Image (cartoon, rainbow, N blue to C red; front, side):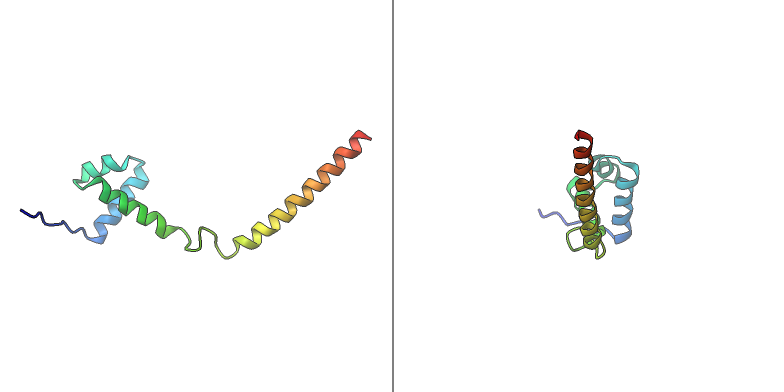
Length: 90
Protein backbone atom coordinates (compact mmCIF):
# COMPACT_ATOMS: atom_id res chain seq x y z
CA UNK A 1 0.00 0.00 0.00
CA UNK A 2 1.51 3.32 -1.08
CA UNK A 3 1.78 6.09 1.43
CA UNK A 4 0.77 9.58 0.34
CA UNK A 5 3.30 12.37 0.67
CA UNK A 6 2.49 15.15 3.05
CA UNK A 7 2.57 18.70 1.70
CA UNK A 8 3.61 21.60 3.88
CA UNK A 9 2.72 25.20 3.15
CA UNK A 10 5.53 27.78 2.90
CA UNK A 11 4.53 29.45 6.17
CA UNK A 12 4.97 26.17 8.06
CA UNK A 13 8.40 25.62 6.48
CA UNK A 14 9.56 29.14 7.34
CA UNK A 15 8.29 28.75 10.89
CA UNK A 16 10.03 25.43 11.37
CA UNK A 17 13.34 26.83 10.07
CA UNK A 18 13.01 29.85 12.36
CA UNK A 19 12.50 27.56 15.36
CA UNK A 20 15.73 25.71 14.55
CA UNK A 21 17.72 28.91 14.01
CA UNK A 22 16.37 30.96 16.92
CA UNK A 23 16.27 28.29 19.62
CA UNK A 24 19.53 26.56 18.62
CA UNK A 25 17.81 23.22 19.26
CA UNK A 26 18.97 20.24 17.19
CA UNK A 27 17.11 19.67 13.95
CA UNK A 28 16.11 16.19 15.14
CA UNK A 29 14.45 17.51 18.28
CA UNK A 30 12.50 20.23 16.45
CA UNK A 31 11.43 17.72 13.80
CA UNK A 32 10.15 15.34 16.49
CA UNK A 33 8.28 18.18 18.19
CA UNK A 34 6.62 19.17 14.90
CA UNK A 35 5.95 15.60 13.79
CA UNK A 36 7.97 15.76 10.58
CA UNK A 37 10.92 13.82 9.23
CA UNK A 38 14.35 14.97 10.41
CA UNK A 39 15.76 14.88 6.88
CA UNK A 40 12.93 17.04 5.58
CA UNK A 41 13.56 19.75 8.16
CA UNK A 42 17.31 19.54 7.58
CA UNK A 43 16.73 20.11 3.85
CA UNK A 44 14.59 23.17 4.61
CA UNK A 45 17.27 24.60 6.92
CA UNK A 46 20.05 24.00 4.37
CA UNK A 47 17.99 25.56 1.60
CA UNK A 48 17.38 28.64 3.77
CA UNK A 49 21.10 28.96 4.51
CA UNK A 50 21.94 28.69 0.79
CA UNK A 51 19.39 31.36 -0.09
CA UNK A 52 20.87 33.76 2.45
CA UNK A 53 24.42 33.46 1.05
CA UNK A 54 25.39 35.57 -1.95
CA UNK A 55 25.23 33.54 -5.14
CA UNK A 56 28.82 34.22 -6.23
CA UNK A 57 30.52 31.98 -3.68
CA UNK A 58 29.94 34.12 -0.61
CA UNK A 59 31.63 37.28 -1.89
CA UNK A 60 29.62 40.42 -2.48
CA UNK A 61 30.43 42.97 -5.18
CA UNK A 62 32.45 45.30 -2.92
CA UNK A 63 34.40 42.58 -1.12
CA UNK A 64 37.01 41.82 -3.83
CA UNK A 65 38.08 45.48 -3.86
CA UNK A 66 38.24 45.56 -0.08
CA UNK A 67 40.17 42.29 -0.02
CA UNK A 68 42.72 43.69 -2.47
CA UNK A 69 43.08 46.88 -0.40
CA UNK A 70 43.55 44.90 2.80
CA UNK A 71 46.16 42.62 1.22
CA UNK A 72 48.14 45.63 0.02
CA UNK A 73 47.89 47.26 3.45
CA UNK A 74 48.97 44.02 5.08
CA UNK A 75 52.02 43.76 2.81
CA UNK A 76 52.95 47.37 3.54
CA UNK A 77 52.66 46.85 7.29
CA UNK A 78 54.77 43.71 7.07
CA UNK A 79 57.50 45.65 5.26
CA UNK A 80 57.38 48.44 7.87
CA UNK A 81 57.63 45.84 10.64
CA UNK A 82 60.67 44.25 8.99
CA UNK A 83 62.36 47.63 8.64
CA UNK A 84 61.74 48.38 12.30
CA UNK A 85 63.11 44.98 13.33
CA UNK A 86 66.30 45.63 11.36
CA UNK A 87 66.71 49.10 12.89
CA UNK A 88 66.43 47.68 16.41
CA UNK A 89 69.19 45.16 15.65
CA UNK A 90 71.52 47.93 14.45
